[in-house]
Length: 522
Ligand code: MSP
Image 1 (cartoon, protein in one colour):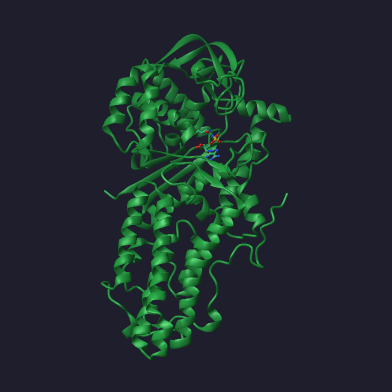
Image 2 (cartoon, helix red, strand yellow):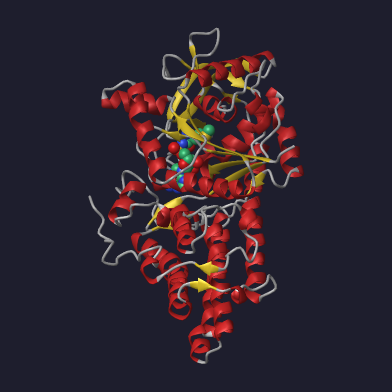
């Protein structure tokens, strides 16, 4: 059977506009998916918005609009941001979609029928920021939610409960016997510890306290808990139906990678996993938890007034394409650690890597090709796959595939840049300008060929991060725009005239040059 790749992201709450933390996750996911598309034909990328729950209900009430109006308004902001950032999803699900709503009720019914849901009166501390009951031992000394620094509300209600404790041992065994299930691996112990004290969870709220949600089937006094609703999106979006699952669902499920933030790993690796077990469905192959993006080393928050939208960044640097920001974000953190955004660092990093390292290398080399050979690659310049640079290119490609297999887009980016460094060093060491002066023209042409062929590799390898720059590089090389990895065979750059003086253009302009301003607006 044809190999498939199904990737999902977390679905964002639409109680506000997207910020660069949300953007980080979607860019990371998009970069991984674009890479996979370079290798496979059967790839599916799902993202979406989480539109129910008390948080949305309260925000809408405070603004004097209906929750659906709030959702529609903010959904557009998210979706526009993803278009601006060229997030090439296959589907964006909204949890207010009718089909999703219907299947969530079906799922709830099935869990009831399985005997995994029961009614129970309960008193607990609810944080609407987390949309979750909190364990009193996890609060700060002042009794606040550690993530939202707000006092949770004490709630006493009769709700439906899911028998999470029934799945405890099965979950522990599964996690221990599947080392790829939770990534990065250092998160596994955190989950195993949480599982030790796991209790059954409330999976509904009374209609009196939460109206904005999906109703519990056959009980008009209760609303389904927003996390049960939200987590189900990963299967409802691709046509899950207990009686009659779609062909798409059969093709795509289980997901290969579910990309989420470190703050919601418990919901995914414990709650979601237990629900899937109850439904008798296979578990996702990997849940990948990324870290958080801070701004100038501080947590982004409305109260600190440091929330930045991705649009602000592009606008303030006069960027009409998202490549530089995508590249910066996708390289912001290694191994699921937190990353940081600062204007200064953004500018420095993209100038160093994209303008100086990659951009100048192409520019200088094309100019030499014009100067010495009238822009023509001659037959005798074409080197074989055993040349030093060819071997390095091949090795680089293999390493990148390996890194993407473990979702390490930042490490893969470093590998591409270090390859470009080596090619730059090769130019300095071989000094083609000296070879030309000494009239060693074939040798000089071979060096230029090596560099331009390496640039073709770089274009294809950097494509997931910088799709427009990658296309511009291939255009400058007079190559067809095809980013499939099957094109990464040394010797692909053909003989003939590929350029002339007037055609050579920089593929990335330095930020802060006369074309870009670093002044932040607003
Ligand atoms: N709606 C839930 C997820 C449900 S998934 C079935 C939610 N929404 S959220 O809007 O709060 O967050 C959406 C995603 O963005 C999460 O994966 C979260 O970790 C991520 N991020 C939110 N702020 C972030 C940063 N500052 N940095 C990086 N990612 C962050 O949780």
